[in-house]
Each structure stands twice: as structure tokens, then as C-alpha cells.
Image 1 (tube, protein in one colour):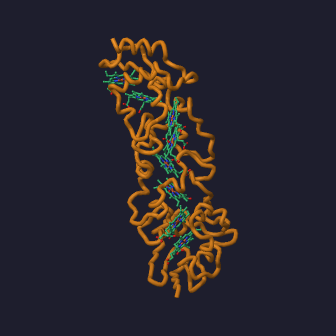
Image 2: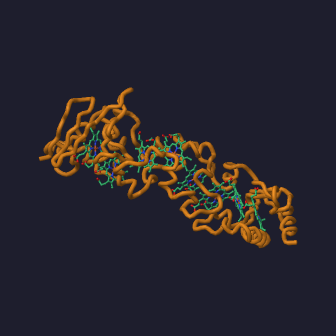
Image 3: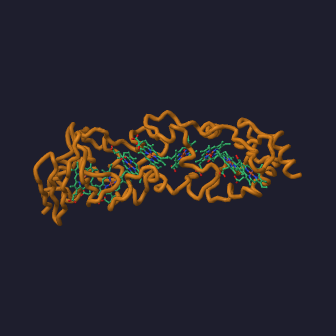
Length: 278
Ligand code: HEC
Ligand code: HEC
Ligand code: HEC
Ligand code: HEC
Ligand code: HEC
Ligand code: HEC
Ligand code: HEC
Ligand code: HEC
């Protein structure tokens, strides 16, 4: 009998997305029936507001009995991502859009009903990102930025006005203009004297005496990209120094060795060079 009533309600009241009525007592009753059996859909830390307001916003009856073996009983009112765009702005045409978002695979990151994680993520943020970006895993030393703030301290999950889904500017070129602006991302957190002060006793440890070797390597219209020497995510070496970096078609070894007062490297672009702070 109850199921019969439910079916009548579905047939009569399946809403179109444009006439969604929140807090309609009839629809609340309808939802109570559903969650008798599908309580897991709303029993979550982070709830999707859409779900709290009824199942039939997204599910419509096929007219067949429910639940019944071999019969689905319900179909979605639309496909993802179009279903999501009934209520959410369609991802704007970002110059740098994240591939799974552009492909409309919203459910590869979100659980549409509810989740234990913020923003309905199917996994905690870093695990989610690393589940697809596996090659970033397994480094001995992680950038403290990631330890403190996760991936989204530097990246946007959907798309960004800056390249690489970044929150700020960071140059693509190997030899970009050496300005604070072109490395804006790094200088959200690091002191600008690291790159600009010719002489310093404190702004960096990469120095010969007081001569700032960051400034020596990164100045003028052909500065050097940080990624010549560092990996922004993590590395097996101290100070996030890269083991090897692509140089044309060749993987160039850095051979970096840290010492108490400085360090040395033997890259392909010059012979062995050492620096000493004292
Ligand atoms: C008497 C228990 C019961 C009630 C009440 C119930 N369901 Fe189900 N439902 C099931 C079972 C059992 C299944 C099949 C196993 C599964 O997927 O969990 C199912 C499956 C589904 C599915 C997936 C089926 C498919 O093939 O697409 C949807 C969607 C669904 N239910 C929606 C609803 C909605 C909406 C309501 C309220 C109108 C509802 N159910 C009420 C028991 C119930
Ligand atoms: C905002 C849209 C939306 C709302 C509201 C919604 N669902 Fe769903 N539901 C979906 C989508 C999309 C899928 C398909 C998920 C997939 O393919 O992974 C789905 C799948 C399901 C399934 C089958 C797969 C599974 O995850 O178990 C069940 C059962 C279900 N929904 C029940 C419900 C119930 C019960 C409610 C109300 C409490 C509800 N849904 C509200 C969008 C919605
Ligand atoms: C019927 C309207 C409706 C539909 C359809 C809908 N949503 Fe929502 N969604 C909402 C509302 C309302 C909120 C809460 C207000 C907000 O954050 O915009 C929300 C919030 C969210 C949030 C943020 C949750 C949080 O706690 O931060 C995510 C993620 C989300 N929806 C994903 C989706 C996805 C993915 C789909 C498609 C599968 C979808 N929504 C379809 C209405 C809808
Ligand atoms: C690669 C994973 C990923 C994919 C794919 C994805 N999202 Fe998200 N989405 C996120 C993350 C992570 C957040 C949380 C952002 C935050 O907390 O700042 C989010 C936040 C949201 C929000 C909350 C409001 C906002 O914009 O911050 C909505 C709504 C949303 N997503 C909808 C969608 C829709 C619709 C799709 C499919 C077109 C989609 N998402 C695809 C990861 C993803
Ligand atoms: C479902 C799989 C999936 C998940 C989850 C995912 N990504 Fe991606 N991501 C991709 C694919 C596919 C590409 C495009 C190919 C590539 O560059 O690897 C991409 C590319 C990127 C890029 C390079 C974009 C560019 O324009 O160069 C960044 C940065 C990125 N993802 C960050 C993230 C972050 C941060 C998260 C977690 C919020 C995340 N991804 C979660 C699949 C995923
Ligand atoms: C300190 C800022 C920062 C943090 C935090 C960060 N990234 Fe990145 N990420 C970058 C920069 C800068 C680039 C662009 C590097 C380039 O120009 O090649 C990048 C590029 C990427 C790319 C595309 C190129 C590649 O290396 O595959 C992916 C994917 C990516 N990041 C994923 C992640 C994930 C996943 C996390 C969290 C575990 C994360 N990032 C955290 C700064 C960051
Ligand atoms: C969200 C803040 C944040 C951003 C953005 C950021 N960093 Fe960091 N970074 C830190 C913190 C915190 C530390 C640890 C304390 C320190 O050494 O200053 C750190 C340390 C480092 C270290 C030294 C690691 C060590 O083991 O001593 C390097 C190298 C580095 N960052 C490079 C970069 C580069 C290159 C960028 C830009 C692509 C960048 N950072 C962007 C916060 C950030
Ligand atoms: C030519 C190689 C090289 C380049 C290019 C380079 N670094 Fe470094 N960086 C180093 C070395 C070597 C160290 C380790 C210094 C030490 O502790 O002995 C270092 C250390 C650091 C540290 C730790 C604190 C400090 O200064 O001692 C930060 C932060 C940092 N670099 C950020 C950056 C940023 C941001 C860029 C790009 C704007 C950059 N680096 C470009 C070689 C480089």
C-alpha cells in the first residue's frame, strides 16, 4: 500500500528542475519513505543540500515497482554533468581547466549524496589528488607547503586563470624574466629578498659568504626557473633539490651534496661548484 502511494506521488509530482520546491511537506514524506531503506544516503557528515530536500529532484520513477529484483524503478532526470548544472554554474571556460572537470566527470571526485569529507569529496583532499597523480607519491621530503596546506594551497581543483591550475603566477619558461611577479606563487610565502637581495646574511642559505646565489642565478630578462634546481612537491634530497632535471632531450644529474657550511653540485651546465656561507 505504502509503495503504491509512493508511486502515485512520483507519477504526479516528479518535478522539473526549474520548479524545485524546497520544504514541501508532501515531498518530505516521500523522502522519509526512501530513507527507510536508503538511510546511508543522508546519514553523512557532509550533506548535499540538494539531497536533504528530496530524492526526486534527481531520481524519477520509471513507473515500475520499487524495489524489485531485476527492475530499476528509477532513472536519473539527466546525465552528469548536466544534472549538476541545473543548480551549479557550469564550469567557466578557464584557460587552464582540470581535465576530469572539463570531461564532466564530477563523480570521480564528489559523492553526490553525502560524504565524510568537506566539499563532498570521495576521499580526503590529498589522497584524492594523489589517487590519480601517483607519480608525486613516495618522496622522502615533502614541501612544507603541502604538509601544512595540502594541494589546494597552490592549486585550484576545477580550473584557474593561471596555468597549471595554480592559485598564482608561475612561469612555464626555463629562462623567465626574473621578477617577483613572474614567480608570484612562491613569493606568496617566501621572502622576496631570497631572489632580489644581492648581499644578505639571512634571506637565503644559498650564498657564498654574503653573496646571494639565488640572486646570481635568477636575475635579468633571462632568469632561471626555480624548477631547474627544486621540485615544488617533494624530493629525496634536502632543500627539495632535484636529483635530475630534463635539459633538452637529456636527463641532467644535479649531484648536489649539502655540507654544514654550504654545498656543492656538479650539473651538466658547469663543472663542480661549491659554496660556503662562512
Ligand atoms: C523497501 C526498501 C526500499 C524503499 C522504501 C526504497 N528503496 Fe530504493 N532500493 C532498494 C533496494 C533493495 C535497492 C537495490 C539495492 C541497492 O542498490 O541498494 C534499491 C535501489 C535503488 C536505486 C538504484 C536502482 C537502479 O537500478 O537505478 C535508486 C535510485 C533508488 N533505490 C531510489 C529510491 C527512492 C528515490 C526511493 C523513495 C521513493 C526508494 N529508493 C525507496 C530498497 C528500497
Ligand atoms: C543531486 C542529485 C541527487 C539527489 C538529490 C539524490 N541522488 Fe541518488 N544518485 C544521484 C546520481 C547522480 C547517482 C548515480 C551515482 C553514480 O553513478 O555513481 C545516484 C545514485 C543513487 C543510488 C544508486 C547508487 C548508490 O549510490 O547506491 C541510490 C540507491 C540513490 N541514488 C538513492 C537516493 C536517495 C534515497 C535519495 C534521497 C535521499 C537520492 N538518491 C538523492 C543523484 C542524486
Ligand atoms: C537541485 C539542485 C542541485 C543539484 C541538481 C546539484 N546540486 Fe550540488 N548543491 C546544491 C545546493 C543547494 C548546495 C549548497 C549550496 C552551495 O554550496 O552552492 C550544493 C552544494 C554542492 C557542493 C558543495 C558541498 C559542500 O559542502 O561544500 C558540491 C561539491 C556539489 N553540490 C556537487 C554537485 C554535483 C557533483 C552535482 C551533480 C551530480 C550536484 N551538486 C547537483 C544543489 C544542487
Ligand atoms: C579533480 C576533482 C574534482 C572534480 C573532477 C570536480 N570537482 Fe568539484 N570540487 C573539488 C574540490 C577539491 C572542491 C573543494 C574546493 C575548495 O574547498 O576550495 C570542489 C568544490 C566544488 C563545489 C563547491 C563550490 C565551489 O565551487 O567551491 C561544487 C558545487 C562543485 N565542486 C561541483 C562540481 C561539478 C559540478 C563538477 C563536474 C563538472 C565537479 N565539481 C568536478 C574537486 C573536483
Ligand atoms: C580522476 C582523476 C584525477 C583526480 C582525482 C585529480 N586529477 Fe589532476 N589531472 C587529471 C588528469 C587526467 C590530468 C591531465 C593529464 C595530466 O596532466 O596528468 C590532470 C592534470 C592536473 C594538473 C596539471 C594541469 C595543467 O594544466 O598542467 C594539476 C596541477 C592537477 N591535475 C592537480 C590536481 C589536484 C590538486 C587534484 C586534487 C584536488 C587532482 N589533480 C585530482 C586527473 C585527476
Ligand atoms: C608550493 C605550491 C604547490 C603545492 C603545495 C602543490 N603543487 Fe602541484 N605544482 C606546483 C607548481 C609550481 C607546478 C608547475 C610546475 C611546472 O611549471 O612544471 C605544479 C604542477 C603540478 C602538476 C602537473 C605537473 C606535474 O608535476 O605532474 C600536478 C599533477 C600537480 N602539481 C599536482 C599536485 C598535487 C597532487 C599536490 C598535493 C599533493 C600539489 N600539486 C601541491 C606547485 C604546487
Ligand atoms: C603556501 C606557502 C608556500 C608556498 C606558496 C611556497 N612555499 Fe616553499 N616552503 C614553505 C614553507 C612553510 C617552507 C618551510 C620553511 C622554510 O624553509 O621557509 C618552505 C620551504 C621551501 C624550500 C626549502 C625546503 C627545505 O627542505 O629546506 C624550498 C626549496 C621551497 N620552499 C621552494 C618553493 C618554491 C620554488 C615555491 C614556488 C613554486 C614555493 N616554495 C612556494 C611554504 C611555501
Ligand atoms: C641554481 C639552483 C637554484 C635555483 C634556480 C633556485 N634555487 Fe632555491 N636553493 C638552491 C640551493 C642549492 C639551496 C640550498 C641552500 C643551502 O641551504 O645550502 C636552495 C634553498 C632554497 C630555499 C630554502 C631557504 C634558503 O634560501 O636557504 C628556498 C625557500 C628556495 N631555495 C626557494 C627558491 C625559489 C622560490 C626559487 C625560484 C624563484 C629558487 N629557490 C631557485 C638552489 C636553487
